Image (cartoon, rainbow, N blue to C red; front, side, top):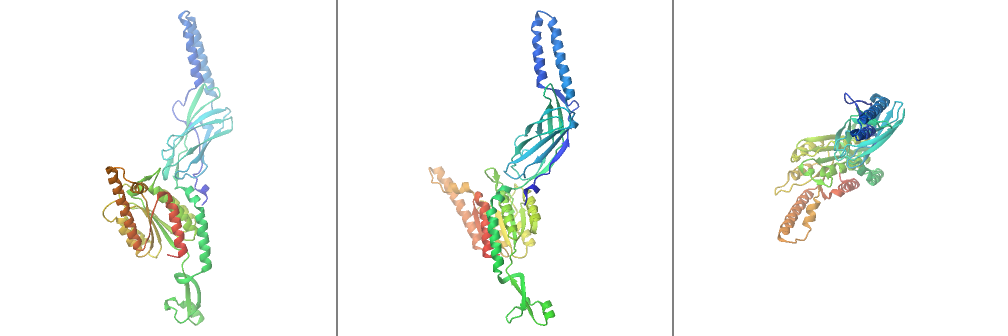
Length: 458
């Protein structure tokens, strides 16, 4: 997918006055007024110096008035905001501000942007020099820390001439809603998997396996031993003899990406939450699966179903998946895994690959997600992926230094052992169960998917 199609559209607007008196005094006016106060010192001996001070201040005020009259009106300034990239999670994106000066006076302008904290910790301010009847530009960088839609507000201008006696204030309505996508750079870094997926697809086209699949391959005359359900009766009627349908193993399978958005996925790994990591991995996997010719669907759930994208293929469908993943949100409550499993079984009745990314609660009871996964296994191939708690594993691997530390290590070892037992239980029921460190989540999911495709496990 071309990232240029995902970048927000440029917006432009003529400036307008912000207040009833949209002007003020520049730094040189205050400098002159300050110097004029010095005439009050000799006024202690001769009062005529007070008239000199008044004349000085009057000249400063006249200079201010002349400079203010030379400054362009707000309507003579046109501001445009454009994006030199796609806003995606944890990736810097450059924003360009262009000022078009339609007046006959050169100005120096300071532009303050109304940017939400999810895009930048502090509001950006840039300085632009715009000659008479020409344009000037400046840029700043945003670093999104949260996916989803964000509202970028207006831009506020403060501009002066080269004399700097006066200044004007204005506002340009550049408000727009932008979409922050998952980490697109991570998906680009996994292009090697796309090459491997293409290789597997070509190999399967050359093999053209016939078997128990239900994808139509060709027709031939009926041979003794062929199943009656495979007889093509329309072709039999035309030819006057029995004709059998031949099937091959399906090359285009259904792949569902199921992501838990409950409280366990709110845990942070560095600056990102576990759900952010799961969304980034799901985007990379969806790109590889669609490139391989498979149909991909998405299900994000918490207490209710947050996002649901039906099976599809092609670049427009990838765009739909991308926008859906961008809107996935962590919830404070425990996710309803049984509802997610029931919804998935209702949506997908034929055998497919289910990639389920979740985490396991540290309880003495069997987590609900394990029971939900067992329901899926009856019909589908399940790739059950748990995001590992690396800090817990590191603590369990330590050697106790004192009695208090010993209890902490023992508790960590017990939790790690319990997680291993639960994953082993899911694996013995026929699932492909993994516990993956957060940094290897994308690589592990895509590698496992390619292995499933290569071995024709679906």
